Length: 303
Image 1 (cartoon, rainbow, N blue to C red):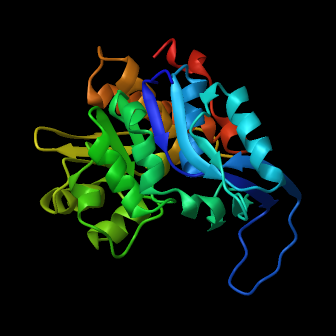
Image 2 (tube, rainbow, N blue to C red; image 1 turned 90 degrees about the horizontal axis):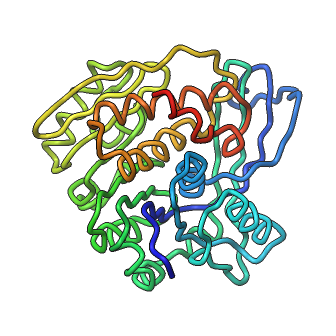
């Protein structure tokens, strides 16, 4: 199997998306105006985001044995993702996500992991040569902590762990092993135990996470941009102002873009890479959907 510059270990989800004027309150039923089914899951999203920008990507994941499994793999192939390491899982459903999106672009998501729970350290070890030859390895926490930890241990390139969904209790190796620990404001708050609503609070949380062993911390702040900290530098990057119609998958678009840039643009600094990733993510929220909203490589030509 030919090695790819970006390898993603993670989840495949079918997104069942309802659009409504606003998000419902607890116990409330409201009328939506549209329903669509999309391909999602943080792992696959991040892989597709990098592939659409022109990255040579490979996904290590599991789908079920239901009607969605082959459709999902066909979609990945259409997006030029190498699917040789995406496995069918007997007697298991493909992962699903129920998503509600408000007219403001805000969203609420419930996931049922399904086959993603079956992705194991044995699967990762079977792909050792692919992982060890990757320029950039990307992981998340929709699969198990053990899978993420073992994958990073096999990585010789840059590793990005997206700490999502956040865990209140976790193996400290999740913080100490990756090159970059990337979380959004709510996830940073859980991992650091501090409020994170603005760049100043993001800096405090990043300092705390560095003290807990992170090599570098990247906190995304939605339309406020992103904050980065490592042992040598710290900076804040603002996000372009756009009209948000659907924020679902924006963080995945950001990470996919960052992985692509780190693998392909050795001529730019970390700050420039994060600035460009913010532009890609901001562009994605101007369209409905998740993977279908991610931009192609044309967006980077003039950046």
